[in-house]
Length: 112
Length: 191
Image (tube, rainbow over all chains, first blue to last red; front, side, top):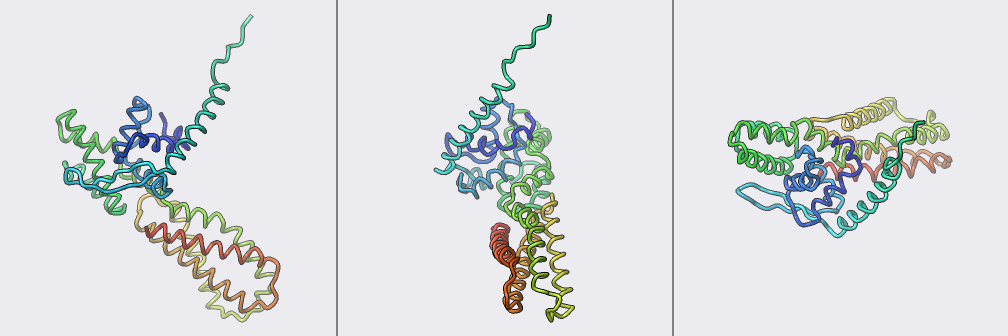
């Protein structure tokens, strides 16, 4: 899936990836890839600044730990993040319903 | 920390461009990707290349940090409001006959030069894609410069104009709001 197709939906996707519990940046990207069966596979390095932006917006919170001798930053949803995720879901379902209605099962015109 | 020279070289490039904490986080992710690919293929060179490809090259990663940076957004906002500020202050200066003020020519030249420099620096901040630290400093300088210029302009107006003119109702609040926006932009660039 092209990156531009994700415009406007990246925040919701990242929040959804964190819904089941705390993850570090690489795991967020992997979770996104796995849940979409590889259809959404962002360049990993571009996920981190998006997570930082969500953290600045208080939608997620990050904490440092040391794993295998490396410093690791792990993120989890805040209460505001869960609310935002619900909003993203509702908005997406409304949008998807409308687009499906417009583009979906339309009959080909009959040829006589 | 890095498991392969290619990974270390990639991190060196990113270290020269991005804040230390961001690079530490990227290093962890890059190393994790490398280890996963190494487990899968067993070839360190191939694993390192695959990890770097998965991450995106240094330009892609740096551009993403620029795109999501709060200070870049502040720079866009300051630039976007520039034409309105110019019209509001231009009208104020015309209505208050600013050409009759006893402002020394060097001060006018210095003010104009500073303003043009700030605009140029803000354009550079918005257009930059690689030099993250230098661009962040340019944002701090621009925002502080705007605070000083707006402060000087408001002070000059308060001292010089005895009878308020109507465009001041737009220009003065706009400058006060821009001072606040510049303070926020400076804080965003420093944190």
